[in-house]
Length: 537
Image 1: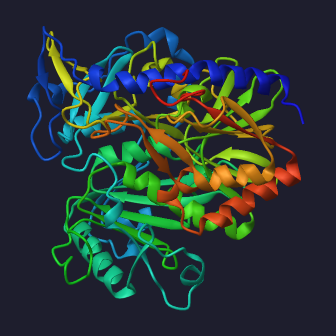
Image 2: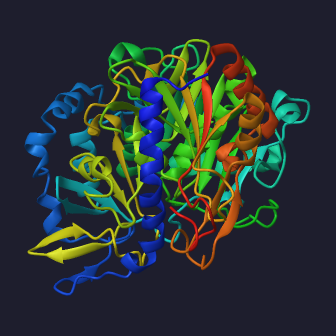
């Protein structure tokens, strides 16, 4: 089977960009040391420390280049308007959280608009306003946790349940007991019952109606609601929220810790615990926004295969001319984000997707991108998406002319600086967020050992092998401490989020390929004809 015309163009683009991707990795460490000689370094204020009082009156964000370039997105921003502020003794009941046992807060901020979120963030001193090139952006510091805490994520082992039978219990899907979960759940509820106010966000995950799930988040502050508003599918009308019964609820008590973690047989006072049968999760001790996002992704990796639907850790786009869609699987540093951002193709999503009997679809309503060494030249879509309503996490700021300007090259806080933004910040994105069955499935590997060819057409059996292997090589500059090429394997290109055994997902991929006829490819964005330093990139 020959690749389609759009597929051939895409593969040529992939191989030509491969060298650029590798070179970016090699220069990352050197670039990371850049510090402006004319400006002093200023880190983002922590959530628990007061910010510059001058920002408290800053309730109108300023658009710079984006005021013209992003005019179409302005209407989509305004279209999201299902906000309710519930006040009085019945607030919790009206918000639906009384069923959780939360009944003390007398003010509930439910599905705030973007402008309201910004005003709350500023008034609550939850961070600072950063002057990004394309517009003012709120910026927060998540404290000591600048990434997920995988050792502190747990699933409840309910004996005799479906999840007890199907979950692949291992050091990723760590088991805890219903009794531990109940203690932590009661602790989270008790904490919220000491508060006068809370933030509630009702949303959806999965753009396909056949697999879509309803999710409710309960937060203490405005910025976590801002994060999930960016990342999940926002309700379009009040009608969608009428009689909203969540399929899963996350209570995020991030300001609290589990002092009894040793008695609970956990690893630390941080606890991210999901109970599939109870349809509830609690989060303690970590402010990192990604815990909200990836926890729900792990659940989709459990729910969808039960209905013969295929969850995927990949990016996806669709050809503007032919409507043919493509999937890009790859670990960090392989060029997944760069290749999916093709000017001749519309982005469906950059990270989490599903594949059912009708085609592929995005799980999310936004993107969560790394900002390390970000420039408009290297990643124009991401760079231009950082404007009003984006949310910067753990990005260093420079004080310039009474403004705080992001410095994406200063990684003294973390190399995992991030930005979340709604999908409509990407010009020309694929608004339906769904497409037909993919014509091309591309596995990206940055091979530093000169073994893989530049491009290989795969049979379904070979596709299964590379999918389960999830191979790439880490080279100097991609991660702290990496000084020579190191092989890295992550089953299904997302082992950290697989709730079931990897072969279950491989079987689903093979079934989809055999049924719908897509072509799988292996594209080497690293070195060919010789190892790193010898071969061509």
